[in-house]
Image (cartoon, rainbow, N blue to C red; front, side):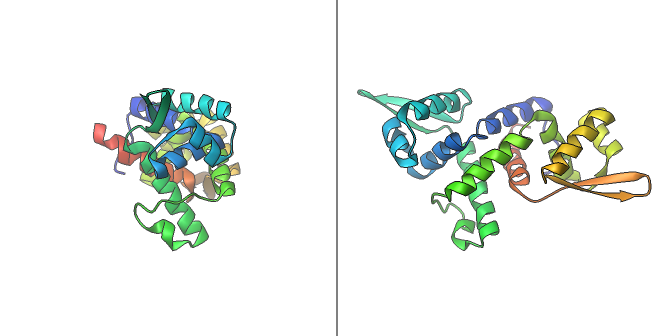
Length: 209
């Protein structure tokens, strides 16, 4: 990552990721990444959720541009829409591989169902940081490293009082760390799904710059 995404691309990226801040949707995307194309019935059986709930969440994923559908006779089949959703899950699997010391998951294009409690944790964390202003702050720190409040404020165009509130929440949730040096407080991004997703977003949307 060399520079920040334009605000219009960042909003588009954040909107897509925000739909994954739900464990059922995250597991649907995981299933389709592994099995490519499937009916609602097969997805529901595999992830052990009611068919109606799966259908509702597939509609939301389709509206977000993360999945597409195709009718074949009486049945509708779903698949991931493009490489972006799959690349997100590739990043999530590698993160799990590092955390769990599971080397299979560190191999490129290795695909297997992740533990349910891990995908639940990822979905819950996405809910906490997937907000346009929070993501711009995290992106700035991921690119430029440790920075003071005034520099972050200039870089993301958020006034300092509001920025300080966001930084406090991000710190409380473990997404950033801070240190004091004299009168200044410096912040830096931590390692985790938030940093992984930002890198993945840049891999996708930097092509449009």
